[in-house]
Length: 333
Image 1 (cartoon, rainbow, N blue to C red):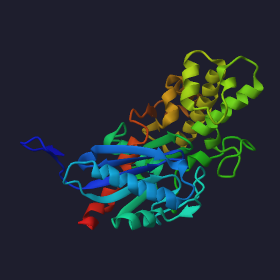
Image 2 (image 1 turned 90 degrees about the vertical axis):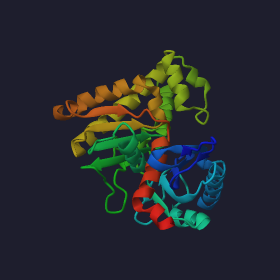
Image 3 (image 1 turned 90 degrees about the horizontal axis):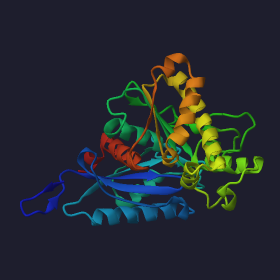
Image 4 (image 1 turned 180 degrees about the vertical axis):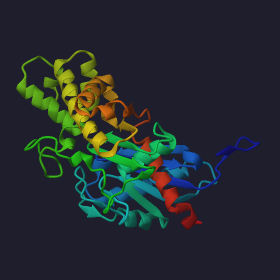
């Protein structure tokens, strides 16, 4: 964007809509050159029972955002990030926290705009955003773990995002943490996501309320009304159940990071998503568990970082970056 002599702002280059589809909310941003986030909006993913309803709302939101920008604002493509996304086929394949089944989301969105559309795993997109614009800038080997409704992860090895044979690499949320443990949304038991995610965190709170007798304001809150932010706020006031829930969740997270360090030898493990808003109340037990569980060579070299970016921002930027790398603007011209 530049400002003319008359003070009118004009856009230079092509605009990409970056979309971060989460299990609870979807964030949409219009991204200009060099990762400039020009406008942004969000809406609940869960308000839409079918993928068709969701795509119609998404298209309306993108059009509104572009329409609010000063001319000449020209949309040239859409880059999406979603859980269980297969970048090779353009499909989202039965994500654990959405009930759409397997849908060709790329074709559906392309039908709305007649423009090139790309899709990538949400955590891969967020990691690409971090490596291009964020705390992982300049790194070649890094892992990003996103702690939202579910648990996502992206992996970079020697500067390249690891995709896997079917575009499904990095499903660390479905690594087993407890044999015969909690049932996960994927249908299996004991998955990391059932313990280390906003949803798993809430389940830990209610398990502790059932097991322990201490007074806690959390006893007055229903499961549906409970949020990670609420628990974190109570933990800061000394609520024993809230503190215990963060301790338990942090220990699981630290063990998971130790396993990932052994598998990939990263320079850094970056944590993002709403749950990291608990700050040191989560990070201290996580780092402690990492130090106790990881090999010494990794405790001495692997940095554990927290993304300072707003939730969803890096996935939006990464999705738009992926679209540009795939040649969206060239195809659209």
